[in-house]
Amino acid sequence: MQTPPSDSSPPPGLFDPALLMDRAMLHRVYGMSAALLVLGAFAVSQYFGRAGVLGWMIGGGLNLALLATVEWSVVRFISPGKKSLGPVALVSLLKFVFVAIVLGLAMVGARQGVVSVLWLAGGFVLPHVVLALKVLGKLLTQNLPKGLK
Image (tube, rainbow, N blue to C red; front, side, top):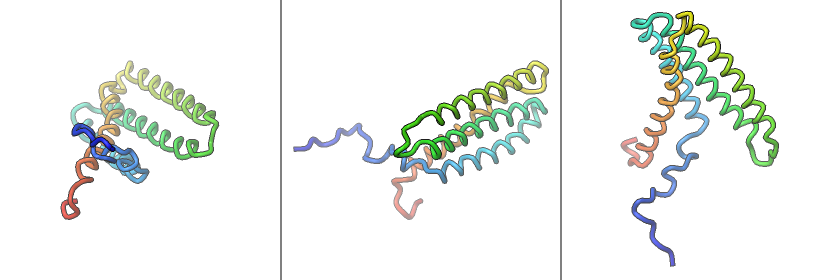
């Protein structure tokens, strides 16, 4: 005898990551984030000048590079039958060094007034916002009738 599911549990498959994200969607996130970075750079330049634009582009570019590296690492190193985590650890270490160098140079630029740290943070958040909005949109539209999609 099976117990009926509680009313508070989500329908089966609603939050299944495989249904929400695939590589094509992730590549659309990259494209949309890059387009918004360029458009945002024009907006930032109107009010905050070159320092704001440089911070915006460094933050967004850094985040896009990190997301692409994570995707590449998962596709290349994490698959059935592969037992060694050495390559993943090496890529993670190299990413850490890369981020430390980029942020160190950005901080030097910020002390000289060439880079805006505020806009660096804003640019860094942008790809995550695009990804979250795309997943939310997919969640909201996946159960719509065929004529409304």
